[in-house]
Length: 94
Length: 254
Figure 1: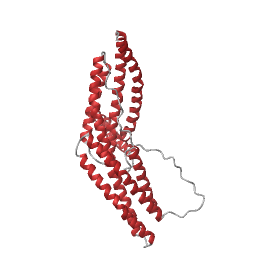
Figure 2: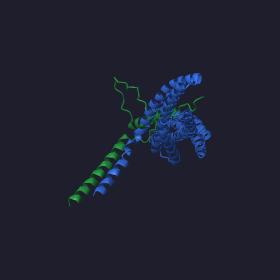
Figure 3: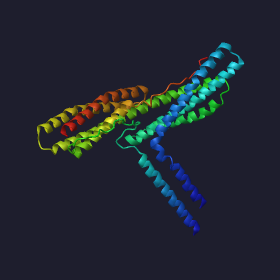
Figure 4: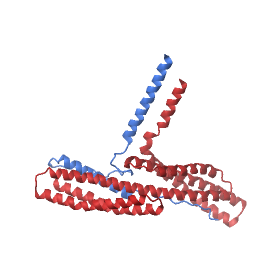
C-alpha cells in the first residue's frame, strides 16, 4: 500500500516537473513572427504628448505595430554577423 | 519501486535541456567570444617563442615553443568548439522559429563536435612539434567543413527569414486592403488602394528571388550558399520598400 502510494507520488512529481519545464519553455520562447537574431534594445523613448490628440483607429494602430515589428526584423537580418567564421592559425609556420 | 523511481528521474533529467533551448545560442556566442579572446591572447607569446626557437634551435627554446603551441592549440580547440556549438544551437533556434527541417546539418555539426571533443585530449597531451602540427592540420580540415556548414546555416536562415518577412508583409498588405474595403469611397482611399497595387510589383519580384534561392538551396556547396546570400541581400531593399510603403499608407489613413 505504502509502495503504491509512493509510486503514485513519484509519478505526480514527474508530471509536475514536465509541466513546469514546458511552461517555462513557452515563456522564454521568442515571439513566433520575430526572427532568430539578437534583439537590440530600442533607445527611443516615447514622446510625451502635452496636447490632446484624436483617438487612433485601433485597426490601423495594430497594422502600424505589425509593420514596426517587421521593420525591426529587417534590421536584424541586415545586422546579423555572429555567424561570420573567425580566423585561426593552422600551422606552426616552421 | 526503485526501478520506477530511477526511470522517472532519468526521463526528467533527459528532458531538462528543452526549456533552455531558446537561450543557448546567445550563451554559446558569449562563450565563443570569451574563448576566442583567450585564444587571441596566446598568439603573441606563441609567435615570440617560435621566433626564439627558430633563432636558437636549442632544447630549451624547443621546449618553450612546444608548451606555447600546446596552449595555443588547446585554446583554439575550445574556441572552435564554442563556435560550432553556437552555429548548431543557432540553427536549432532558427528551425524552431522559422519552421523548417535541416537534419543533415545537425548530423554533420554533431560529427564535428565529436571530433573536437577528441581533439581536446589530443591537445592536452601535445609533447612535440610534430604532434602539434598534425593536430593543427586535422583542425584545419575540420574547420573548413565547419566553415562551409556555417555558410549554409547563414544562407538558409537568411532565405527563410526573407520568406517569413515577406509572408508577414503580405498579411499586413491584406489587413490594409480589408480596412480600405470597409471605408467609404474617397480620394484618399482610392490613392491608398492604388499605392497598394503599385507595391505588389515588389512582392512579385521578391517571390521570384525566393524561388531562385530555393532552387540554389537544393544544391550543397559554398558557391550555392554565397549566391543565396547575394539573392537574400537583393531581397532586402524590396522588403524595405514594401514595409515603408505600407507604413506610409497607414500613416496617410490616420
